[in-house]
Length: 311
Length: 234
Image 1 (cartoon, rainbow over the protein chains, first blue to last red):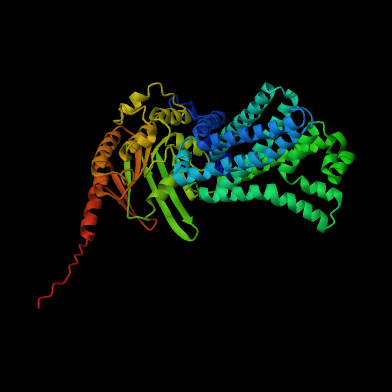
Image 2 (image 1 turned 30 degrees about the vertical axis):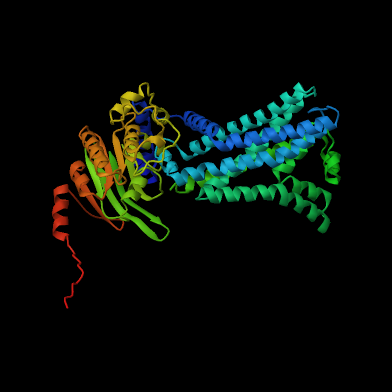
């Protein structure tokens, strides 16, 4: 027995056991309960949701999204004889392009501003001095901001659909729900990237700058770069398709087209290649890439956040 | 209640804390005293688990680096300057931080009354003065009746009246059996609040003793330099 204790002391196992016992003892002390992981994530998320709902950025982005969405929907529906949101009409094409422009910017800036501005105000250190882990804080922020973005997206699409319906245009609920769902996935992937930028930078102004630069890169540079690369390097069609999967906005665009029963042929040879090679399975490729785009930046953010000083 | 053993911490090449060992028992109050850059705030941030360090810090037997969340549940912390969410109302802040400590705050007024903030529950935090914000931070720190209080130069940003009021409140709290660790570079605060004083300089513990010993040491080591312009008479 003595030898067992000695060997445990050497390996540090005894210390570990004693610490575990101390934790249990404290946890069972009536007035000193330790909050659970889920309750902390929920509280931070609720706080974030309430803060964002009161903030100007949320109202501004939502109003811009609704106004632009209405403009696109109304003009497209009018010119296509009232096809509204059903099928691959001009409305859906217009809304997909609108989503690619507005939603990533909204999500990137929301994520980039969150941790960095808390750090700048001294709020981050104060929060982390409470009984909360860094992972709980990060996931709480992610969940709260994701809820804010979902609200904004639903409001945007909802108002568009309501006004189109009032004007007599048909709005297929399944097509609409599918577009909302895909938009939300895109928003979450960009939110994770925004949080990664936020934990990696010290100042909120720098974080916002990097977020806007990332948005510009994903929206314009990668699109133009892909086209230029395909021509200049005489890229093989499978490489072109693989490269387009690197950009979540391209994945969103292709997935939205597939989900609206439109052949990817409209995207040209790369789309044709995807349809011929993967068939219906291409949806799974899009889903996997999108999920990776949500998980990987968030995991990287958690890893950096756990090591960096909050001050 | 607080045990700091051989703690060192560096910012790059700058050694902010160098092999410091201290302990604070329940009912004791220890002041970290020293000039700016002595390492007082860094030690406090290590105690809170905000910085990574070498050595060991235990709160109520819990290792801060391994069981940070549980250890921080035992701590009530008041920083030098509070950065609460500005548009939050006072009672909302109490409720929010109470939730993070697993404390259901049914009557925020009674909590606020204890720190002299009665009648301010409905105000937004941005409407509070610096002294009121510090009182609110103290009310939040006391939620759940933690056995350890950690204070980081809490009066540094207050005027004379605000400082006296807050020190009076803290003096009451230091007599109710909590372990208190606080950083200060004001002798009057140290004398009012501390049972023992740890004098730090450039991250190293120079000496530890009673506030009276500190006063003696500082009296013998003080030099008053007086510079006056030379007046030339023609």
